[in-house]
Image: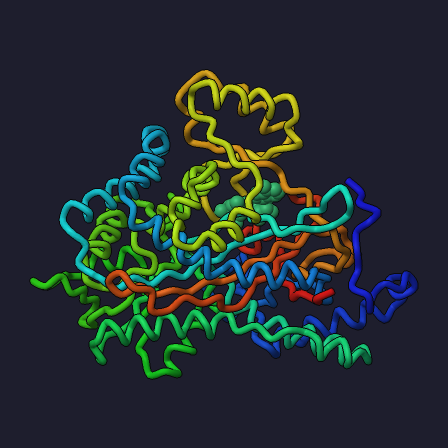
Length: 483
Ligand code: ADP
Ligand code: MG
């Protein structure tokens, strides 16, 4: 689909620029600078060998982002932190909201059974650390105004803060090389990983055992290693030991003592920071589930705990969008509820019954107006267009429906940029941007002792790709050029 109104940043609006050799020269400079700044990712062919590394994909220049919406996204993040934290403590709501999903979605059922078990046994840790990322697009209205609309909130393994912190330096250099130093000076610094590290460090401190370590629970495929290392280095810089382990390591060598203190390879663990565990493939055998349960039962501060992980499911996002629901959780903060509500588009349950039947009918008639979402994270799982129509046709007469939700499709303002990806053609593409804002909070007993918006992630992809993120090779890293 062509979007003639796709915008360029003001400094790149001259058509002649895109037809001369200088732009290719700029791309070479940009890629070289990416290596110098540590914007790196192991290759897909050899993901566990960091000696086989290339640059992480990114845009040639920063993309235009409305200043007003960028500010709004930062302002509403503390509201979202509060909401996620409160929802995570309401077991009645979580149980009821997920009841139909756990009947048909084996993975969510697995997580839910761990949640139930630890609730019954009693939660051993009174300190909660939440690190999330709320993602948005800039929806274009009839009158060409734009508004901030939430795609989803990630409450587990919200990544890319480390690499996102490094993109501004690359873009600044590109603009300086181009002779646009005024524009370069306007590029925002991003403290996403530093902010997250502050949160982990504070939780570690509150845990109160100076010798204890922070455990990064990571996936076997180490393609995100440099992103994670950025965060690890921040923590080591604060004299906090970080160890990296897989679920299987925890299963083999993790133990709880009589007071449920978690030890791994002899290290007491203060904080378990999950960078895996959100996808069924992360639990490739039962031992991984046993390890997750062991962690959940322990006294370590889990980031996230299992309840907060569940709050990030698509089903909970949809249930919270019901009229009055956010407001119920934030009765004492009506302004927060209002700010949050303003970012929602329509989200619909398609559980069996007249409400589900009606919306399925609408979506089958107009598939381009909706996105069909299973309870999965990590990109590449959503269903669009003709495929959505077909799938709804296949599942509409049975309980399998409850494994999905429907969402209004956001029609965003489009931009133009060059997507730099190892091995990809160099061309000016029509793109959409997705802004993520990281949130960090800590609750001690019933009190929030930290509640911060901490940095951003801007991802850009061609309008030709419907779903997917940086990890699945669709989006690339970007920085906002506020307009
Ligand atoms: P995941 O957990 O897989 O990241 P998301 O809800 O973030 O799931 O969706 C993945 C991608 O699909 C998003 O990055 C976005 O590009 C696209 N997408 C999701 N929801 C919508 C929507 N309502 N409108 C338009 N695009 C969407
Ligand atoms: Mg997403």
